[in-house]
Image 1 (cartoon, helix red, strand yellow):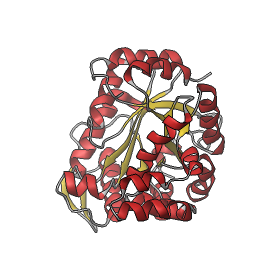
Image 2 (cartoon, one colour; image 1 turned 60 degrees about the vertical axis):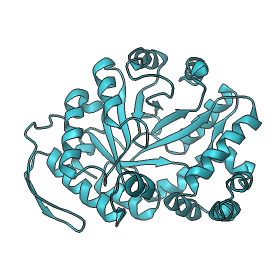
Image 3 (cartoon, helix red, strand yellow; image 1 turned 30 degrees about the horizontal axis):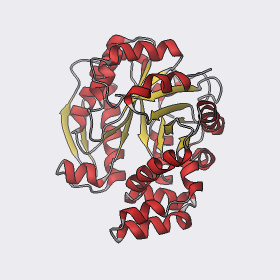
Image 4 (cartoon, rainbow, N blue to C red; image 1 turned 135 degrees about the vertical axis):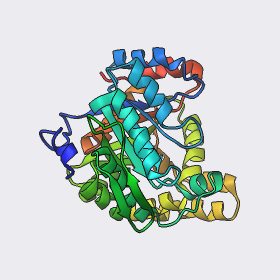
Amino acid sequence: MPENFASRTEAAPGRAAERRLGVTIPFDGVSLPEHRGWFARLADLGYTDVWSSEVDGSDGFTPLALAAAWEPRLNLGLAIAPVFTRGPALLAMSIAALAEMAGDRLTIGLGASSAPVVERWNGIAYQHPYARTRDVLHIVQRALAGERVDAELETLTVRGFRLSRPVATRPRLILGALRPGMLHLARDEADGAVLNWLSATDVGRVRQELGDSLVAARLFVIPTADAERARTLARRMIAAYLTVPAYADFHRWLGRGPQLEPMWAAWAAGDRAGANAAIPDQVVDELIIHGPAEACREHIARYQDAGVDVAVLAIISPPDDLPEAVARLAPR
């Protein structure tokens, strides 16, 4: 296990000792300046973390920089920073600048992202994602440790880079990981893994590959008692994500292939409505947390009991209903 993780953790990431509950930021329909009040409210409600993402909204670093400056009670996380869309030196500089503000509150997830994000939107070849993640992790770790980096690796070469602003407190570096190869890299070379799109009963399977490493997981929550409405929305989300090859392979590995094959076949044929309709209720109810607030909290607890150390809620709610939803899902 990397030294910087072990030095800050007296025991293995604890199912009870380090159980944390966070939310995904920025909130839809809320401007970044308006988040200042939200960050204070989240801390007052008992949330421990705010985690950003980097897909097609804000970048991953700016919301965390605001949170670091505005609310010192919150831990900060990014899930994930793609390893293709920034060079490793720039990625190390961005992490170092945020670590200077956040200290030991910061966890950065690195990951391969997906071909649509990397190739279609950024014009970068999506090749050798495992090797690229491994190589960027290696370079960023060395840079954050204050080393001069000279490295000729499988997917990139770096010559003579050193951070001119040393990092006083190195953040945790975890990997977006779905299957054994990347999960083992997260276990052996990083501080843990960030998971996505899995059920509470899937956590044990992933934990077998990760051992006692830190596990963060983004959990999608639709807090409504209207099950039909929730499932309709959830099906659109599932079809959009689980047809991406990396997630499809993940669910085949988890054993969910037979349940999802009709969706994949309809999607491949261009039948989006048919793909949505083909998703069984059981899969929806396993992968998306929905229902009244108390039922949602119980479902979240099942993930935590199974071994998720940091549960990060992605709350799907109309902006006008968001304050109440956040309050009702807060730790009790």
